[in-house]
Structure formats: structure tokens, C-alpha cells
Length: 197
Image (tube, rainbow, N blue to C red):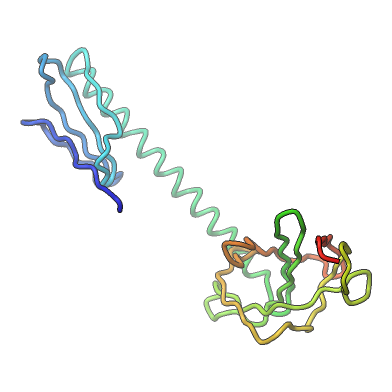
């Protein structure tokens, strides 16, 4: 069960709220009569910081610098997010139906899965994938402990279709197998190994 921390707000404290960065600062005097302040971010009950100061001027100076830095961090984060979104959008535009994606996963062995993009949503943000077979050394893989595999386009495994968000040139298969990435060269072979002969 998740517990929430109740904010400590000193009695008689002066509240300053900065909505653009979701920061609230409380100015007060501590029991010794020294200027102090405590700050919270978002809805957190845990203080971002709590300090005492030599005088009120030092306190206000520190708060102003803190707010300025938080605004700078927010601007940088928004800029990075916009750049990442633009790159993903550009990468999505280069993906087409028929493209092959490869995923390697496993513990003490290397499992290889291949997926073929069979449909893209009108928004271009969702891809529909079907698993396809892989072949080793030009032949169908049959009880080999290791081999080099390549994808077999249109050689589907069952009727399963995965609906996944396209993040540039990759998509998340699941929590166990992780991510599958676009295969730039479908003829290129990838390594496979297994403990089972």
C-alpha cells in the first residue's frame, strides 16, 4: 500500500506559488528567529529543500535563483522532448509495410524473433506486426544449437498480430523480450544460440 507524506507547512509561513514550474515555497522564521524557507515540487509531500539563511535578503536571493534554474531545466526538457518527437516522427515516415524487425533476447542463450510490419494506422503512430520464420545458413533451422539466421519475408508464424506503438525505428515487443529494431538489410544474418540440440 502506497503511503503519502503530509507536507510540513510552518505556522504563519508566507506562501509563494510558481505555477509554471509547479513549485511552492514557504518563507518563515525558525524557532531561533532566523529566516528560513521550505520548497515543494508538484504535489509531493517531501520537501525539495529546506534551509535557514543569514538574512531575508539571502533567502529571497536563493529562492529567486532556484526558481530561475527550475525554469531553465523545464525549458531544456521541453526542447529535448520536442527534438526527440521530431526525430521519431521523421523515422516513422521512413517505415513502410513489409519492413522486417528483429529482436534478440534470452538468458544464457540468444533467441531471435523476426516480425514483419503488415499495416500502419492512419496516424502513423501504431504498427501491426506478424511474427515470421528465420532460416539458418540458407536452410530451415532444425535442432541446431547455434546458427546465423535471416528473416523469411512473408513466411508468417500463425495468425498472431501485434499492435504496437512505433517509436521511430523500433517497437516494444513485451516486458520479457524487450524491443525489436528495424532490419536495414533483410539479407544480413544474425546470431542465434540455444542450449537445446
